Image 1: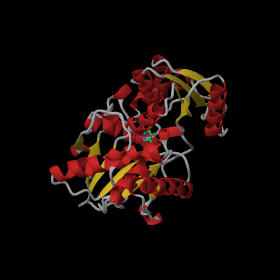
Image 2: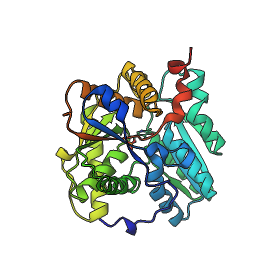
Image 3: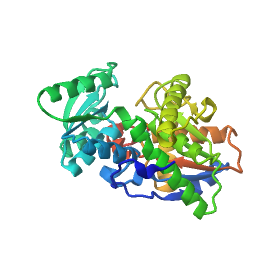
Length: 333
Ligand SMILES: *Cc1c(COP(=O)(O)O)cnc(C)c1O
C-alpha cells in the first residue's frame, strides 16, 4: 500500500488524538475504551469527512474544477465540511439537501449544520425525501457543464474509493499511534452511514495485515444492505490501493440494531449516550451518528458481548455541530 501516489491536500489537523475514556470505562465495568478524536480534524469544527475531502478535493483541483457539488440530509456534516473546504480553496460550492426527515422543527430546518453551510458561502437547493440524490447531483452537473462551468460532484458522504483513501490513511495513523503507546487494539468501533469510513478502515487494516477487526454501528440501512455497501467499497478501495483483491465478506461487520425509527430520528439510547459522554468525559457526541454508535457500544458492553480484557477504540467521527438542531432533546431546564 503506497498512499503517497494519490494526490492529497493537507488541511486536516492530524494525527487526531487517541485518548483513554477512563470514567466511561469504569462506569461500564467492561473493556478499556479509547477514543480516536476525529471530531478534532480542525476544518469547520471537525469530523470524519475532512479526511476524505483531502483526497477528493486534490482530485477536483487536478481536474480543473471551478465548482464543487455535493448532497446530503439537511443536517449533513459532510455538506458542512465540503462547503468549508471549498471556501478555503476559493471554489464555488453548490449543495443539494434532502428533506429526509418528516415534519422537522425550526431548529432542525435552520440551525446547526445547515446554518453553517450558508455561513461558508454554499448555494443551497432542497429536494424532497426519497429521491435518487446522486442522480440529482449528476443532472445539476450536466446543467452546469452546459453553462461552461467545470463541476466536480462528490457523492453523499464523500463515499467513493477516492474519499475512502482518507480512512485507509487513518488506519495507518491509528496503528502507528497505538504502537507508540504500547496499546494492543482488539477492536475498532464507529458509526457507519454512507460506508466510506468503514470501507477505508477495513481496506487499510487489511492491507497492513493488522488483524484488527472493525465493527460499524449502522445509522440508516438494515444490516445486510449496510454490510453489502461497505464490502463493495472496501474491495474497490483495496484494489485501488494495492492492485490486488483482498477484502472478504467476513472482514465487514455492521450492527444495525441501534437505528431506532430511522435516520436522524432520536432514540433513548442515543440521548443517554450523549449525556454519558458529556457528563463523564466532557466530550460532545452527535444525535445522528456518533451518539447512536456510542449507544451501540455501551449496549454491547452491558450485554457482555465484548470481553472485559479488550482494548476498544471508538472513532469519534464528529457531528456535534448538529446538536443545536436537536435542541429540544437536550435543553437545560
Ligand atoms: C458521515 C458521518 C459518519 C458516517 O461515516 P460514513 O463514511 O458516511 O459511513 C459518522 N459520523 C458522523 C458524525 C458523520 O458525519
